Length: 121
Length: 107
Image 1 (cartoon, chains in turn purple, yellow):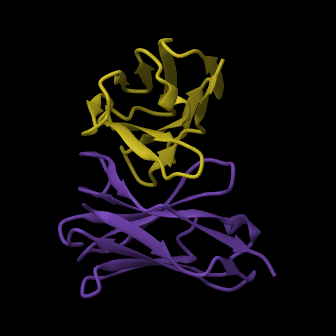
Image 2 (image 1 turned 135 degrees about the vertical axis):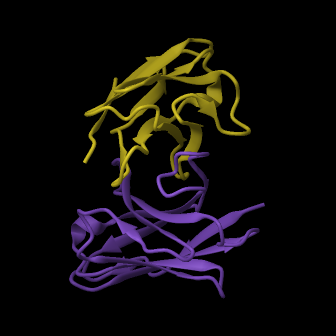
């Protein structure tokens, strides 16, 4: 059974860096794309970006200047860093898996449970 | 970016009702559309991809149709566990974008 688990600080100060990790169990990172999606409390979903285990990351242009997604195959996990955060970055952050870059075939088939990150001083 | 517009934003229905939710893309996205169900406190669950392909394990009362710019999600007979918020998402091009959601409430 594939499982994804997000982890990281639940509270980040404005202007600092948000850092999250998604640990994958039950399968290898290899041959899949790995995605971060966020959802402000009570609002809709926003695609942050994705990465293939060996390829270049692909970011949402709205966040591109502040975001970094990386992968660590030795630990079977991938990570998100978002710089210079503001209150607008307060959201539930989800990690998810797909077979291809745009999640066309099979969609996002596995998701983490999500982790709430609050940006506040 | 491709804008996704869902309607209605909310609806009230009874168990056993047939429910239809629509999603419109701001440009042609062929059949590159997925549907998700989200219950409070849970991650979204992928129901349908490529407009009409049912994700494994999803009940057959869920179906999707459409191509180009107009799409629909239909629940043929609403079950109690179907009360949730539903989102569409285009996978035609990045950035991937989602509709604003349709909340299905108990009448």
